[in-house]
Length: 613
Image (cartoon, rainbow, N blue to C red; front, side, top):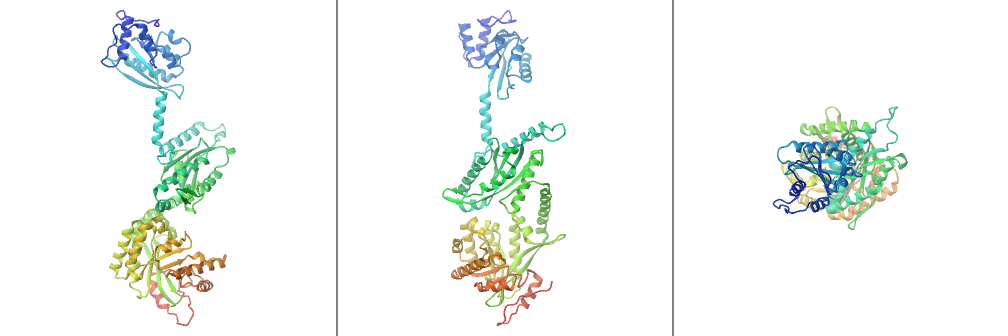
C-alpha cells in the first residue's frame, strides 16, 4: 500500500497523482501507458536510486518512495509516519540546520512560482564528506515533487579532476594553486586555534614551515644535455623530495626548477634544521638520467608559520628571502628567515634601481691592468676591468654589481659598452699592445649579436682584430657548445684572439681545450697566491703550461703579487703574468704613464712599476 496522503485535493485521485509523477519522470514525448497499475509504478519509483517526495501547497506530504529514508539517512519509520516535509527534513542525519533551511526555501519558492519551475540546490550535509542535490518542480496536478540525490561520488570525481588539473603535468606533484590553498588552510587553522589563557601559542600545535627549494646548476643540464634530460631530472627531484617528508606533508612544484614543501612536525619528529640540511644533502647527490651521471645542487629557504608571517604572501616572501640568502652565500645551503634578510633585500632593490640608472647616466668606467710578457719584458696587453662610480657610494668593485647585472639582464648592454669603450681606448696605445675583454656567458646566448657587435666595433674604431682578446670562462662552452663554437670561429675569422679564463677552477675538461684552438690559457689566481700545498700548486701550474705549449697556446698567470710568486711561476714555464706586483688596475688617464714608465733594460730583471696613489 502507498503511504497515506494528506490534504489531497478532491479533484485529484491517487492514480491521477501517480500518473502526474510518471509523466514528469518519463522521457519527453513518451506518455506513460494509460493502464499503468499504481503498485507497479510504486515499485519502479522505489528503485530509481534517489529519494522522491511529493507535497501540496501547505508542504504536507502526498507521496514518498522507498529510497527516501536511505538517501536522507532517516532512522526508523519516521519517513513513513511523517505528515509534513519539515518533519522529514529535520529527521535527516545528513542535513544540518542550514541544509534544512536551503531545501525549505527551494520548496517554498517552487510553490510560490507561477507555472513550472525547476530549482536545483546543492546542499552541504552535516557529514562534510557527503553532498546532496535537490530538484523541486511543479507537477501537472498542482502539486510539487522534490527529488533528493546523493551526489557525493560525483562531487568527489569532479574534485579529483580539478586537483588533477591543478597538478604539475611534468612531475605529478601539486602545483602552485593547490600549494597556496593548503598553506592558507594551515594558517587559518593555526589562527583559529588561538592562544592559551596566558597568551602563548597553543603548545599542542606542531611547528609548521614553508620550505622553498631551488636547484643549483640546473640550467647547465638543460643547455648541455637537452630539455628531455632536464625534465627527467625534475621528476627524480620530486621523487626524492617525497621520500624526505611525511605522508601528510605537501611537496609541490611551483615552476621551472623551483619546488616548495609545506611541512609540519612536532619536536619528537626532529627539527626543521635537520630536515633542511638533509634536503640539501640528498638533492645534491648524483642522478643517473638516461645513461648520464648528472650532478646538481640545491639551496633551501625556510619560513616558520606565524613567527615569520601569518598570511600566505608574508610567509612566501619570507621563504623567498631566505632562499635568496642561501643562494647568495655560496649555494648548497639551508637558511632560515630573519628580519635582516628583508633589509638586505631592500638594499639590493635600491642597488638594482641605481644600476639601471647608471647605465643610462653613463656612470661606468674602465680600469686597465697590464699583462707582462716575461720573455720580452714588455707590456703585451691590458685587461679592461669594469668599475661603477656611484655618485654617493664612490667606486663600486665589480664583485658587488656584476652578479646583480647578470641576474636582472643588464650584463649584455654593459658588456657591449665595455667592448666598444675598450677598443676605442686601445687605438691610442702602441700597435704592439692588445686589449682583453671579459665576455659573460649571457652574451653568448645571442651569439650572432655578439659577433656583430665585435665586427661593428672593430670597423668603427679602426682597430685590427688581432689587437682584441675575448676572455671566456669554461661555463660558456657548457651552455650551447655548437652555437658558441660557431661564434668563436667567426671571431677567429676576424683575427680576434680568444683566451680561456680562470682555467683550473671549473670543469677543466681537456675536451674543451681540444674543441677550439684557444690562443691563451689564463691560470686562475688560486694557483698563484695560495700558501697551502705550494708543491701541489707548482705541479698544477707546470702541467697547465706544458699542456698549453703542446697545444700551441700561451699561458698567463693571474694574481701575481710578490717577487716570490713571480719567481715560482716563472720557474714553472709560464710565459706571461698579471697582478698587483706590476700594477693595480688603473683608470684610463694613467695608462699612458704606465706604458711610458715600463721600459725595462734588456738584461735587467723585471721590476714592478709602482705608481703613486
